[in-house]
Amino acid sequence: MVHALLFFLLPSLAISASATHLHHHHGDIKSIHFSLYQHETINKTGYLIVNGVAGPHVSQTTTPFGTIYAFQDPLTTTPTYNSSTVLGTTEGASITSSLDGLRSLSVAKITLNMKSHKGSISILGGTHNTKPSDHPVVGGTGDFVFVQGYVTSSPVDLKGITVVYKIQFHLYWPPYATN
Ligand SMILES: *[C@@H]1O[C@H](CO)[C@@H](O)[C@H](O)[C@H]1NC(C)=O
Ligand SMILES: *[C@@H]1O[C@H](CO)[C@@H](O)[C@H](O)[C@H]1NC(C)=O
Image (cartoon, rainbow, N blue to C red; front, side):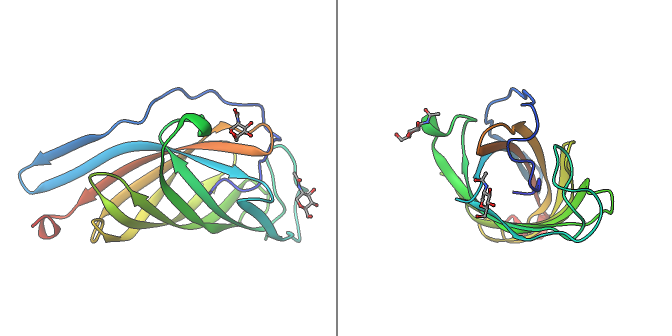
């Protein structure tokens, strides 16, 4: 989703973790913390829309300044798509925003269809092409109305035509939203 255009160019970075669901209620503070895996297939669920205009060419770690990329990717419970359950979708775009080609601005709507919570959250933030990136949650719908928090996106497997990212959700409801 948010990591632009690394495709099959980087060696895979092994990040092992499984989806976890932790619910906390401390007084009026409600939060949930869990992970899903995003699967993006070039020219099938993600497309380069506009070529960038300056800076480095598309490489292992860079995309030209101004590159626009759009995606609609499934979110699953494990890194292996075929043995996973699809619990959501992330749709959005990223624009390469640094002249060195290493960072982009990402916007996405993440629709979640979990047993406990159904709805969407919207995120907006900067993504670094080679490091885990935190994206602020700017709002939500359905069971996620009023949520705040952040979503961390980390590369898991960037080889082949389908790349995988681990998406860690840290969602918090303000006191006025919990009743
Ligand atoms: C995706 O499609 C573009 C435009 O048709 C093409 O130039 C590019 O090579 C394709 N990428 C892959 C990995 O197939
Ligand atoms: C996943 O399943 C599809 C359809 O059955 C198959 O074509 C594909 O090779 C499988 N992928 C893996 C990694 O096993």
